[in-house]
Length: 341
Image (cartoon, rainbow, N blue to C red; front, side, top):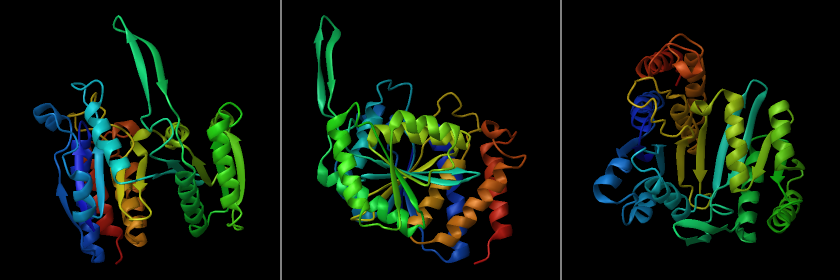
């Protein structure tokens, strides 16, 4: 496992370095060959050089590494998030990371939310007309290609089946957005026919969000377009206890290259205070281990992180009185206590 580590901005520069010793400990315990390089891409570099994603980065990353661990992007000094869009969207599109996986771990079980990651309203197609310094017309186009939707749906259905899931829900809005909505419906129904192990259902996005909050237990696997997946996965994070607990993986199935990213953002209001929660960064490492076929150390890491989160050294956002460092000390102690290679 060769990793490119991008701590990024804000608390990303705190939680990612804090979490990496857990990966090192698991590598030593389970005989995993893990190496990583830290890349200084983020707000500081952008402000100093005007460069977010360096020239040749998209070609270099899959050549030299197997995956990326990204901490967070966002800095008050760059209010339009220009560097964040250049880095994150540049990596998603340039590396064709079209599958975004956001597991939602609840007491009733895990809901696997899969979000198409490169098209829809995030495709960057549109423009605006400005008159006297004010925007008078603004257009953002929702763009989906059938080939991309087919690849996404087929991969997600296969993953859900292989992971032992039995139910899958397509979230769309075909009653109000008929053209792209019907494309998704048609692809979903056709592809689902090849997976008799899965029972499919469909819901409008507004009704789905309502049902998810009231009772998430009926859901196992969820497929959604880019914008809808972005929104419902944040609702799922809230149900878990907050964005500080949510991890994500963005994957290109054809190359197996992946980017793992906590969902919580850079949180500049608490950056530098030593209280940032490394929970999501650690869960990203667990997703990464799973991605490379190391299920046993991944599950051990999850167990230890959850135990630490229930203890006195948990960070304030989840009801504890600990710091980033104390939380990680607890995780590492638990790993040493529980690991059974």
